[in-house]
Length: 256
Image (cartoon, rainbow, N blue to C red; front, side, top):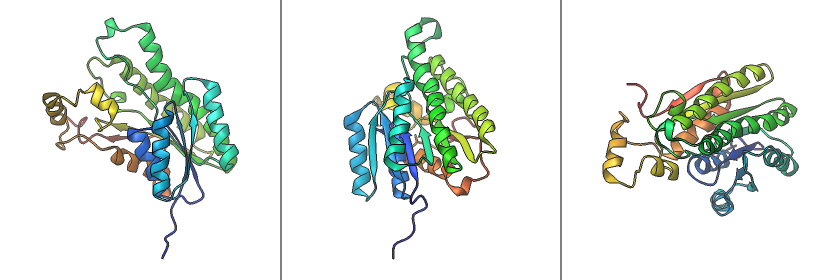
């Protein structure tokens, strides 16, 4: 007996869906029955995600996208509409850690790159996603922030600034769209097992990894699927009364 999938007939757009949290979320949406659009700069890795979705019976397309460029973000959304004729959910996930180090040693180039990707990219994504969702009578957007949007992290001042900005942007736009049927929330993961975390936290080094695990009271780092499940839930009808919220997914990191 075939069960009706919750997101059957719906379209989900994920930026940065080529790996890590983005890939896990793309697969999670597909498992729920949604057709998936992946916007990313990395074609080979994104195609791997699409193959994973096809293996579970899902459908997905890839649109090469640099989210710092308005014309490319507009094209991503336009390609979504031309292919599937609607947009219901979006996970604005693409981001970079940039060069980590003392704030006084940071370059203007690094500032621009991190802010343009992590903050401007989210703003541009919503700018073009929201008008299409309004045509459907509503939708749901989740922006990927971080615990770095809630607290300060040493040697990550620019990254923290970008992620604090994502949370503020999410709240403001959520208020703008509150009566229009579009719910907008953010997720704030701690250290999740991804390539970015491996680089930023030096997880390949045993001592560094043990130290990183130790700051998570739950006793381990997170898995991409754990964030993906939260994103999908925030987009579902089960979260229908939630907007402007920042959902912390951190194994207790920020509890202390």
